[in-house]
Image 1 (cartoon, helix red, strand yellow):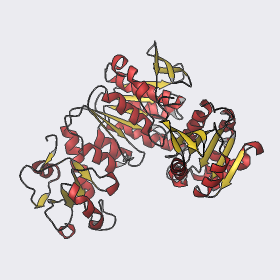
Image 2 (tube, one colour; image 1 turned 60 degrees about the vertical axis):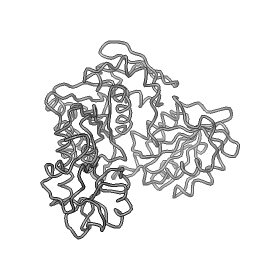
Image 3 (cartoon, rainbow, N blue to C red; image 1 turned 135 degrees about the vertical axis):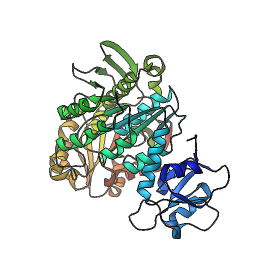
Image 4 (cartoon, rainbow, N blue to C red; image 1 turned 135 degrees about the horizontal axis):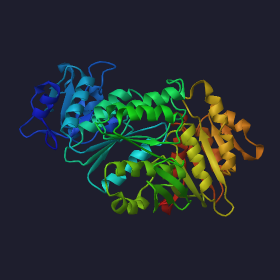
Length: 473
């Protein structure tokens, strides 16, 4: 396989056939099954029936001028026009086939990341670090289930040096067998998706399937402070050639000693003291950076000279701790956008980040919290348990939206209670009225809680200061 897919590659990968032949010299750069993840040069999966992988012909048509053709399972959905069309027996299988073919041609290194919280941030930081050492491709658009993993792999040119993949718990075995990672990072086990996985031990077991796809001699990188570490490390030792740990305990191979509010990380790495400045804020990101360094060290890469100095330039992923300095009706305040998603572990990390930020003169630490979803029968307890971290972080005011966060609100001291509403959109007006100059405002909740709309509205209403995004801290 060359840098791009050829007509012959597609036949070899899937055993399918061309319904409408492409022109001489035709190539494709990847494959797309949903409009939101489309990239120019993709081939489009067009579905024939409800539930099949792919887009409706109606949704695919506007993308055709920017695409290189269509894949389908029946000829009747092939759009009119000059678009090359390729027939596969089954769409999902076809996508898996192109992914396996591309992975078989790839000669670089594959890194896979899982965990209940922090995996997207680790992926982004690892990709940032690896890009200092060579061309790197990583997961985008939260495509961390098998179709998304397959799409990422199928779009990786063999010339790339590194691939970083985020793997979700759903169908983990399929994802890791596709990825065949050389390094697998496991960040933590926390209450998330308990609607589908009844216990944390079950979460640990199912996420530990990531190690079953490791290439022979591959490395497992584990947070030694995670819940059910014994379950995870047992699975890792069964499949990995080497297990490396990071964390805050004395047994960690890469041990966090200290992290300051201005981003200085002090650690001991295999017995050697190391100090560096990390761009993304928060103690949780300092731990994430150790996972990244563990992966680089496992690969024998010179991270001390080529990566450590650059970490100060790394940035938080949008919606995961990204900070904005705003002017809202003349009031200068800082907004911490951590609204992409939430579970108890990431919520505590976000609250800890808020606690590490100092308000301006006359300002307060303000938390705007939306429901954490899919936590199963113990959801009420997981929400009310946040009262302690909020107190420890010195949070002055807590505004909540949603029925689960209302339980937390009721547990708070009267002086700490802000506005309590049912929906995120209903929170915007009273929040804007309440904010003061100097406030530091954290917005966090599961995506389904809608708190990302609060962030969007604040950004739309406010003026950006000249330093609209927090540079390093």
